[in-house]
Length: 343
Image (cartoon, rainbow, N blue to C red; front, side, top):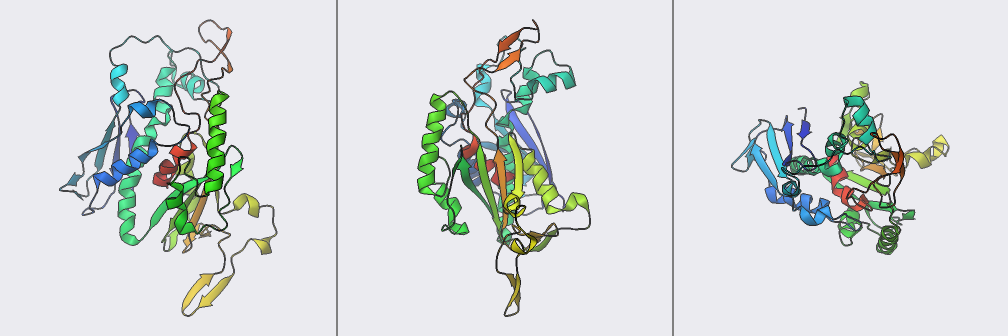
C-alpha cells in the first residue's frame, strides 16, 4: 500500500483542500478527532491574530461513507473564514519582498508581478490540511498500536530537562501548558521568553521532538535510497515551512563521540532480542528496530517580524524597509501537531 496526498489552495482563498490516495477501505474515521487536532494547531503562546479569526473544521468530500473509508481517494476541505475579508476587494500588488520568505525567489521563478502570488501558496496556512490528513492516518495506525506524539524541547535557547520524564508521559504533560513543553519549569521560562520577544517586536524558533512508539521491526529498507526511513520521513518533515534541520536520535551529539559510545548493545531477554539503550533513535540500517523512533526538528525563527528589515521595492528599485504582514511571534508550539501529523 502506498499512501500519497496532494494539497491545494491559498492562504486567503476560499479553502485549503487535499486528496489522500491509497488509503485502505473499511477504516472508521472520526471527524471529531480530526477537528480536535485542527484546534490544537491553532493554540500556543506566541500565535498571531489570525488564530482568533479561524475556527478550523474539516469537511470530508469523498472517500468516506457511513463513517468508513471506501478505498477511494479521500477528499477533504478546510474553509478559510478570513476569505470574506478579502473576497472581491481591490488589493494593490505587493512589490516589496520580505527577507527569509519565498516572495522574491517565487516571483523570479514564475514571473509574478505581484508577490502575493508566492506568499499565498507558500504560507504555513497550508499545514491545516496536513494536520487533517495526518489525523486520518493516525486513526489507521492506532489499529496496530502505533502512536505518534510530539512536544517542544527548546525555544529561544531555553531547553527542557526530559531526563526524568518517561517518554510515555511527555505528550500529555506538554498539553498542560501553552508552549507544549513537558518540563513545567522550562515551560514557564519559555513562555516568559516568548512574551519578551513579542515586546521586542521579534520572533523565536525552537526544537520539537517527535516520538513514535509501537513500531514493528523492519519498516523501511536498506536496499533502495528512496525507501529508507530517514529519506521518507526526513523529506516530509523538511517540507514543512520553517523546518531547517532534523536528526534521528541524538545524531549531532553522537557525531562528537567515538563509535563504541553510540551503539545500542544487543541482548537476549527470554526469547526476545532487546537493546539496552536507544542511541540510534529507533533505526538501524535505515529500518525500524522496534524501539521508539525519536526525531528532533529544528524550526527557524519565523521571517515576518514587526521590526522592519532591509529590502528593496521591485518597482522603484529603491532600498526600503519591509512591510509587516500578520504573523506569529513564535509558531513552535503550534507546529507540534503539524509535525506529529506529518510524521
